[in-house]
Length: 419
Ligand code: 2M8
Image (cartoon, rainbow, N blue to C red):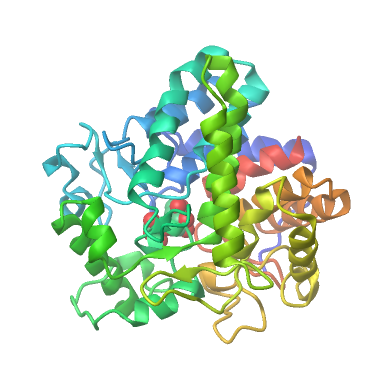
C-alpha cells in the first residue's frame, strides 16, 4: 500500500493540475508519460471535462486536437498520433495514411466510447462558450451518425464495438468468451510494457483483429458480414445515450433541431432494455446472439440515462451497493463483480477500481438524485487518490495504486470531484 503524507483539498488540486500540465504536449494531453505517449480518445474527453473550470482554453484545445483526427466517415479514432513517439501498435500498423477517409494526422482505425458529446456539454456548462459549441457540434453530430450508420450491427439501435480496445476496458472479463472463439494466434512479439495486462495470446488476438479490420479497408460492410468480434457493450451505449442527450440540449444554441438527438437517445434506451437487460445489463455477443454472463462495471453505464425506468435504476443501484460490487470492498467500484471467477483485484479492467468509471457512476447518481450514493462515490474516489496518488487504477480492497503514475484522467476528474 503506497502511503503518502496527508494532503488537503487545495494541495491535491494543485498536484492534479501539475500532473496535467506535465502531460500536456502543447497539442494534447497524453494519458501518462512513457507508456501512453499519444492522444487517446476518451482520456482526452475526461481531461477536457476536468480542465473546463481551471484551464478553459486548454480544455477546448484538447477536444479540438482530438477531433482533428476524425475521419471523413465521422469516426473519432481511439488514438491520434501527433508525434513520432514509439508505441505499439503505432501508425505503421493502422496505416491510416493509406485510407481515403482518414485525416492528415495519423490515427488508429478503431473508435472508443463516445463521451465527447457529454464533454462538449460540460465545457459549455462551465464556460458558457457558445462559439465553441458552434465549432465542435457538427463533428459530434457526424460521430453519432457514423455510429448509427456503421455500427448498429445488431439492428436494434445500439452501436457494436468490434475490438476490445473500443470498449476502453481492454481486458475486461466481458470479452473473454468472444476472444476465446477466435483462432489461436501466435505472432511471437509482445508489447513490451503490457505483459502484466495482457497475456500473450490475448494481445496477439487483439493485434490480429485490428489487422483483419485494417486489411478489409475499415469497411462497414466487412464489419456487418465478416468481422469475428462484434459486441454490444452497455457502457459504450450508456455513454453514447448520454452524449445524444447532451447534443439534444446543445442543439438550440446552434439553431439545430434537438429532435434527432433525443430520438436517438430513446432508441438506444429501448435497445439497452430489450437487448442487454437480464436483471442487470450485460454485453451481447452478436456472433452468438447471447448475453455474456459476467457483470462488470460497464453494466452500470445505462444509469447515465435520467429516463431509465425507476425499477431498473433501483435494481442496478442494489447490485452496485451489494457484496457483488461496492458492498464488499472498502473503495468504489471494482471493474468486475467480485464473485465472478474471472475477478482479479490486481489486473486492470478485471477487478481494480478506476477513477473514470467511478466518476461516470457519480454523474449517474447525480442525474437520479441519489445524493448519498453520489457522496459515497466522491469520498471513496478522493480517498483513493489522496492515499495512492493519481495512479491508473487501484486495488478495490486496500486502495493501493496499480498501473502507471501521473495518470491524466485520474488527475483531471479529481479536479472535478474537489469542486
Ligand atoms: C488502455 O488501453 C490501451 C489500448 O488502447 C492499452 O491497453 O494500451 C485502456 O485503459 C483505455 O481505456 C485507455 O484509453 C488507454 C489509455 O489510457 O489505455
